[in-house]
Image (cartoon, rainbow, N blue to C red; front, side, top):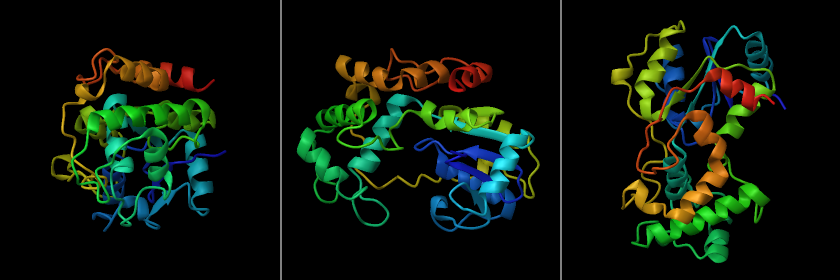
Length: 272
């Protein structure tokens, strides 16, 4: 199976396991800058050189060697499950993607037809009942994850623990797991632990939010989208994420982690 979703700087200074919707664009650009002293011109997911990615055949042996040797600093980044699934909805379901089309072709029409959601019209800019449509999308997300129907779960709303675990199951070990809610503090700890060709001043790094502007703006506070049933569905899907990454299931309005992530616990529970 190898190490899907794993990126490494060309200088082999650091290894990162991508978790979708968890600051991956910003992290990728920081890695790129730390090697080259400049940012990639475009979406870092489109970068096909000056960086090692598991998707590139030439990079696979190098990534595997570095991961299994446990000598290169390795990290990943997680996010509150409530804000992550909301972000996925607005970006991937309601939004027009950077190619000018809907995400994954017939996915959105299928969700509209089978679950009765609205997405803000052709361009995602018309007003619609965001709360009602989001709760119906949650049913769809749960069905894809629990029963793989009407399709397999998408990487943007499948559980973070699933992404994080492949790295561990195949022999990797994390030195740190950063939370997006405490991004500067966590990313600084990563940078302090590695040596890079170029110094990175986090205070002056822009946030590369590649999904921003794709879809409608969230019209309500996070907690308004989650009634008792929605919270139950979210917990059913993301129970392990809440527990391992220390997020507050009881209060959707509290995006901050409740405590420190226990790396030993993460490796023990995701390495089975």
